[in-house]
Length: 532
Ligand SMILES: [Fe+2]
Ligand SMILES: [Fe+2]
Image (cartoon, rainbow, N blue to C red):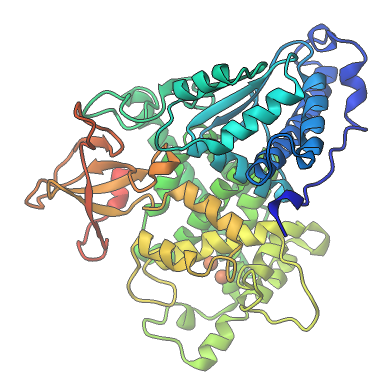
């Protein structure tokens, strides 16, 4: 009946408690890098996820009930137990960074069931531009209740972090502090200021991801990585057509490199998917689906090993097309019904091809599943049609989104003209919860942006610009980072400036506006050259 009765998983303290409460300063006595330390860190992460879960329940319940209502008892008590356990040595901080949740500096990787909860907290924090909440041992029941009441009463448009801090003090809340959002480049350690209006006016170099040299180097690495993955798909496809047997070693190594690059700079890798080499459709499509799937898998919280599996599975999702004659595959016009029938066999043919290539016991389940299930659709409206009930795997649901997006934005598969990225995304959003898993699709939009990477836009100056990466501030998703590529008359220019569309001038107005989304096909621009 109400949100107050949200069914959240119960707090499982039993298995995680002992290590942490035996001795107060245990965590300081265990050396970093030791096995015991790893176990301790893992336990903290597990508790962190429980803390997020309970915080989510507390906030949702507080939207309905008064702070003293007994409906709040359970989440408040659970949070207090967790905080007392976790904050022995130092206060515990839940942090939001680049749309990922962290406990202190540890990434809270959530599984599929926990994803809805994590997304809900991420959205709530983003809305108020809160980057982190710190809980100290001194926190009490009344503080948590008051804080939650304050949290749900805030108007996102009018409150700054300082205003919220003042409110916290005014309401006598003890043991809870908030911090601003910050953007941290994983691994490179270069911090940039988050929020609006804080960048250098004009050309910010878009994202502070290091010097021009570093950027150029990363782009080259990314491009090489792409070529290697494409090369291995080519070799494997050939071998499959010829009935040979092959190993996935080369592809695996190439995928591994891509994952390392992606952790450093997701944009550089996603930018590669705008590469559209028309005569190479199948290879490019496979690589793009793989890159997009890995980026989405990363957002979902797949650990690196699983990301590599997902990368490989998505790379070969269409391997079954090897069983289809090239005359049909490369047919210039529309398919006949009979040809469609044949095309629709490629998911099952894919499983057979994989078994032929590697032997039944050697085919990873995820790979077979990605091939078999990638056209099934979330609501099973797709193909193959099965008589018995079926559960589509998480990896396949990811591949379905990546596959559909790339197929629509490329010019070959089943249609003559490619669709602009934003048109494709809108079409997909209209099928959210039907063809696509709604939560995954939302994460995918966070990945490519609501005006997706590679889109062409017209600014108020009449200059054309290409979208380089989504806005860092999710509440301003319609204001991505762009690179200007023409003058106001439409003449292409080299080395155009990069603009953060969330930037404001001294008067507090946005410096630039997008006045029109351009269909990439309308202007024959190859936007990929701005990425690679
Ligand atoms: Fe397919
Ligand atoms: Fe495909």
